[in-house]
Length: 148
Image (cartoon, rainbow, N blue to C red; front, top):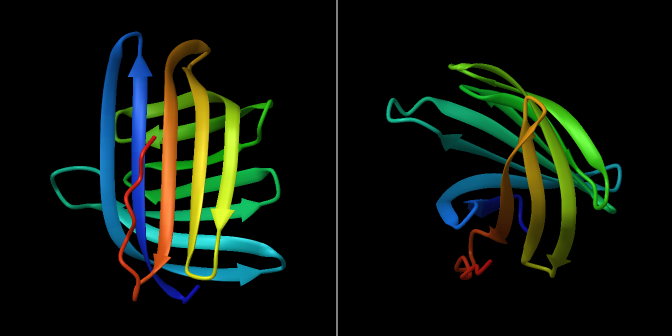
C-alpha cells in the first residue's frame, strides 16, 4: 500500500433496537514500523470543524486507536478481553470499558480492512454495542463499499 491513503470509517452504535450510523472518508497516511501498521488521519467531530488527530496501530490480535484534539482517548481492542480507557470530551471525562467480541484484519497490496465489534460501558454501566470498519486504500484506488 502507498503512504498516501484514503480512509473510510463506518461506525454503528446499537442501543436496544435503535441504531446510529456514522460514516466518513478522509485522506490519511499509512506506514509500517517495527512490524506494526499505522493509519493516521484527521476527523472533524463537530460543526466548528475542529480536528481530532487519529492514530490506528494494528498488531496481531490487537488494535489501538489514539485520538488527540477535541476528543482524547487511547482505546485498546483485543478479542475476548475487557480494557478500559479515559475518554476526554468538551463535556467532561468519561471512563470507558471496552469488551471486544470480534477483531478482523484483511489486507492485500493496496488496502487494509479492519473490523471491530465491541460493547461499551461508560462510567461502569453498559452503554451500547458498536461495530466499526476502517478501510484504508491507496489513493490511486477507489474506496470500496463497506457493509457491517
